[in-house]
Length: 209
Image: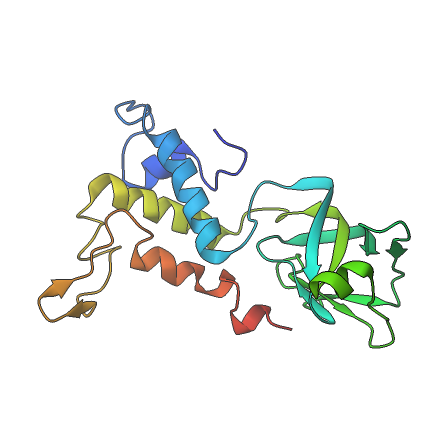
């Protein structure tokens, strides 16, 4: 199993009502789980798994608010502006705020600089943007239940391709048509999974503040 997997073989078997001692799909399920996990995190632009501790990630600074996409920050131990220069600026807690305030899921998605902070460097002059390094713990402390279920639904739809799959149940509703063309979802994230993931998708109003 990959470190970023959002579900388990047993959980998928339960979703498709396959006895846990049935090994018919054991050879293909791990790969499908990893593929679905990547697809879901890419779709949501979130870092549901794994947790990465004491890691430093670099971001482009175009203004006083920096989106941390596609990463999710649990906590920061160091925030450094202009890390590429010979005089990096280690910011204090009074010079920035992690957002959203009191995050519902325990992760931050952006950082807001104080209006009193002067952002100027040679990189900014030459290339019209500055750089920022954030060191801390990244990723969700635990994978939300709805995300796990969305992963199970996605894999179930890939296995069966019909029920639950493309045209009903976990698939795209019948209204997803245009003329004679039906937009099938057999090998993508099915409609029911996408609905579960809606609140987690980057850009949702619930994560904006």
